Image (cartoon, rainbow, N blue to C red; front, side, top):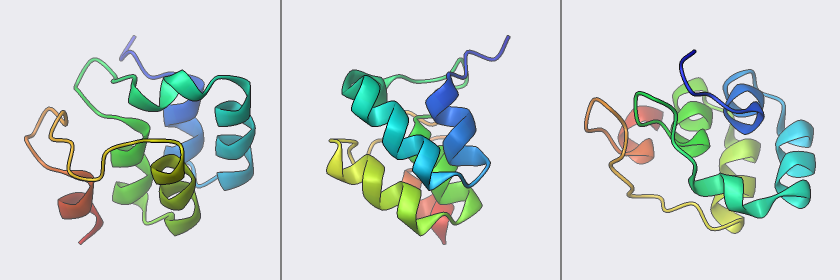
Length: 79
């Protein structure tokens, strides 16, 4: 178990509509980190899913959060 929740998986697999639905159901999950410290925003940024990133930022995810286990921000992962 890597601690990923459905929001992480939807973001990682480039499913922005699922990200939207999950955020509507429970907006507080936007700040939940996996065991390695990734937020859903890190997952979406790493995979280049701009729409999921937008939804997560609008829901309150912090763009410069450095909770990623590697010390990278979502912005750094997107580059």
